[in-house]
Length: 197
Picture 1: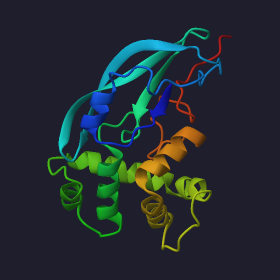
Picture 2: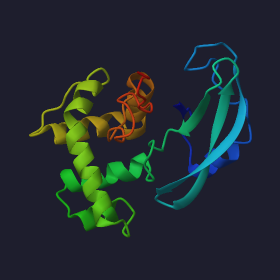
Picture 3: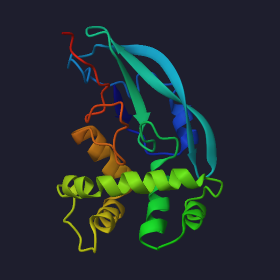
């Protein structure tokens, strides 16, 4: 299971703070709710790309001594299962929908001019399909804004709240993904499994 690492600095500062194992250790297991049950369980690596950084970061993992499952602390600037940071995706979507730029110009505005055309189409398609659900979910943080479509309304709400703060709320409180969970995961972000007959 992934939970958010409560960190708001740069990627370089994030890499420096990973040496402190107890600094952000959750007080209880988010799966079985056992108190003080999590022990350090190493790292896994993932890639992330944003303005000024394109490389690999480490994600700290903990193991619950009671339910024997692992918990990963994903930094707040990263979206699960997506390589690009939240800010990059937000800049791209704002340039495309609010400013009406082309896909190539939107990628340049987001700071990733070499981004493939298909990736931009993929983000646009996923955001359009999630816009009404995002608008309804963010109502507890901000009043809905007047706009011509759910896409523009969701974008304005996300920008008013702040992309990372909105992601923290959606992911931590509602287990929602900003662009929707991949098809192999259940709606709450867990792997699909079939019950034995």
